[in-house]
Image 1 (cartoon, each protein chain N blue to C red):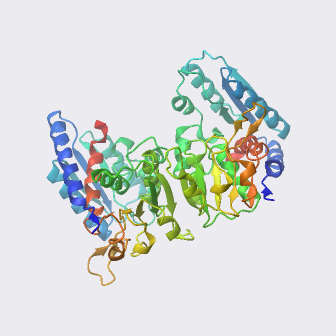
Image 2: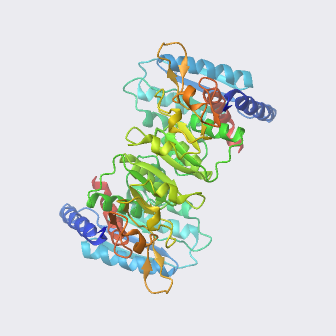
Image 3: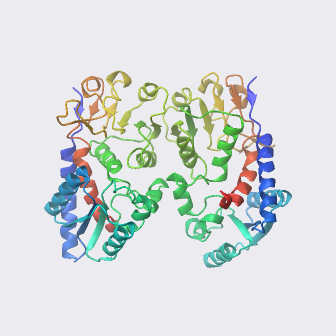
Amino acid sequence: MAKQLLGKPVADRLKERLSAEIEKRRRMGKALGFAAVRVGDDPSSVVYQGRLVKAAATLGFEPLEIALPEESSETEVIEKLKALGEDEKIAGILLFMPLPKGLDKDRISRAIPIEKDVDALNPVQFGDVMAGRSLWAPCTARAVMEMADYYEYDLTGKHVVIIGRSDVVGRPLAQLMLARNATVTVCHSRTKDLALHTRSADLVVPAVGQAGILTGDMLKPGAWVIDVGINVRPDGQGIIGDADFASCEPICEAISPVPGGVGAISVTMVLEALLRDQD
Amino acid sequence: MAKQLLGKPVADRLKERLSAEIEKRRRMGKALGFAAVRVGDDPSSVVYQGRLVKAAATLGFEPLEIALPEESSETEVIEKLKALGEDEKIAGILLFMPLPKGLDKDRISRAIPIEKDVDALNPVQFGDVMAGRSLWAPCTARAVMEMADYYEYDLTGKHVVIIGRSDVVGRPLAQLMLARNATVTVCHSRTKDLALHTRSADLVVPAVGQAGILTGDMLKPGAWVIDVGINVRPDGQGIIGDADFASCEPICEAISPVPGGVGAISVTMVLEALLRDQD
């Protein structure tokens, strides 16, 4: 039986640390406001916003749930973000993606000040992450690192194969892993023989959103799998990861389940970034 | 006999293209000035500056050879760069590295305006490269791409193993290669079994400055090698690359020699970046 890399204990430990910091910050009179800004009514953003706001309040932050109308102009969204950026009570800002059609993500995200940019949406902040000048990467990439650390996986010299080259996971994660002395391979849709790469990996991180892209026969015995994929089950009931759990689990030493793995950490990682100016 | 990936024809073709553009630019009255700024008397910078200035003049640019004294203050260097940045006759600026001790590279390089930053020294420009928002990477990384293109090496789906994770070659090159749909592995000093990775590579790019780090037994038959390494020969006579040419050449399909390979292109790549605002 492979070890299950559950997200909940990782999130719980992080929450404890955050609670202590929040309390300290409250006593010092520092900002604890969290602006969760949604434009329009994308259904998954509505759900995610609700979860984040609730988790923030539970931890002791002061969430501000903002919903701008679908038909907002670019200028209106930018003005709102600028006002929040200047608001001394706001510690961090998250703008939910995707934005309604016609709104430019890069131009709008530049209105979020770097030090309040909790998910590396501002392209300047994203560039800093990619250039190795900031570790405040997008929250899912940080969640993978947090999980590896919690389960005491020593990354030095390990071969890490990341499947996916997205801006939110694959590419920034590769930089975080390199900074920790892992040997990193980034595979993607144009990779010819995916199994050739995964079979030499000590740790595989599938992050493409394609159920079953990683199967047990593609793993080296004893490998670790941290599954970032979130896919709706074929029967529409619940979610599954990118790794085929049934075939991977007997081969690997440790694997994170979906649900209950990385996804259970991401919200807390966003909230951790609200305290980044304390570093 | 492996095909020799010579740098000269690559540089020659590029120079032809540049000459045409320079002529066009001259007729339009556009800036052709190239500020080559050295602080102090680092011997290899002196040589490199001389080569660059000569090549720039030959092509039709108007080089400005600037040597600031070793004891210049950070403010003095920044003021000089700012003045050049504002000078309408200057198309591009190169600040030679290393700077004298006590001068901060990142702070100083920020004074070079992005559009005149010919070697991605400004950390904001470097972040743009790493984030995939700019292809104007440091010149050696671009030289590798230019060589692959000249010799019509189709990168799509190929496994490229880069040895070295420096800011000037390894890390930006990985992004350029990923953008061209290669599967990319970045190895480095902490990689445990380098040969394991290079043996599955279609293209190996050693870029660490360690003679003989790549030998023929570490290659898949038919692989390509683009050697970025420049090392002084053990006998002190001339230079050699990172690949052990004698053992690699019989195994691979193509290999770039040192000298005469990538190094023969780099200077021209810097000059190409003087015309970047035309893109």
